[in-house]
View 1 (cartoon, protein in one colour):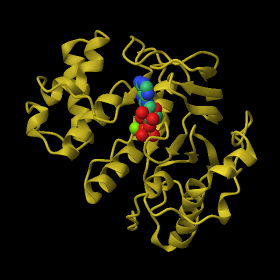
View 2 (cartoon, helix red, strand yellow):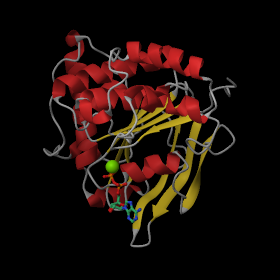
View 3 (cartoon, helix red, strand yellow):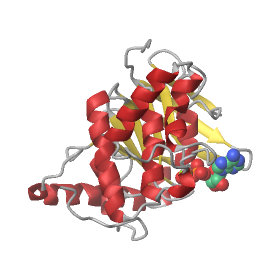
View 4 (spheres, protein in one colour):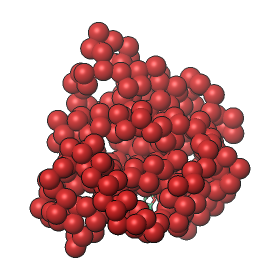
Length: 295
Ligand code: ADP
Ligand code: MG
């Protein structure tokens, strides 16, 4: 398999207007190769739109998304270097677990023996061994989600884009799968963008965190996350203070947006810069708030 070397994902001055008004306003940030970014924001703020733009499945109104020097290949277009997990998992109900999982290999012309072998390895890795002949309707939500994750990872993509992949799962399954994804990421190191509306999830899985807010959505906060992947309960207070910071950014008033322009600007990928004076505002209560120790 020809794999291109990892490259930085560069977003410059990215805006999207669907026709009935702007949705995203001049986003600029970078995700270094092999790192993860969690994008967080309230429902309807444009997170899925951003993910589709990153995946080259939507066209920007202004600005660019580059992987190294070129746009990302459209997922499924043959190269297999980008994988996307959409919000509804996107499994084919008439295909078995094994066929769903190995579909990307089939699309790339991999021989049956290779598909079987890599499919079995991925099923084992995800704790799905024994379920290969089942259909999606015969699986639990968590099992379906694991198949979707496995299907995204089976080609060992350079870039993995995930849209709220854990949002419909119960808390325990979600935590388990978050760790599965973190483990897989640690072993394969794709450049990863995770969309979420869950602050705790963003802090657990985002090496970088981007908070979006306002209409149109702008960058409210960009930070490098010292608590990324952390499961040590003794460091709870550091994690809670970070979560407070993210919640405050999400709660920042509209007028804070207009005072600070379009967030962290074209060079906004630097570490630890905030895009608003969010710290003085009251955190909103409507973001998910289950905060058990992940360890
Ligand atoms: P989120 O994922 O944060 O919930 P979305 O990106 O799905 O937000 O949607 C952001 C806004 O863009 C919403 O107002 C939504 O109605 C609108 N929108 C999303 N997709 C389209 C589309 N294809 N055509 C027109 N408007 C859209
Ligand atoms: Mg969405």
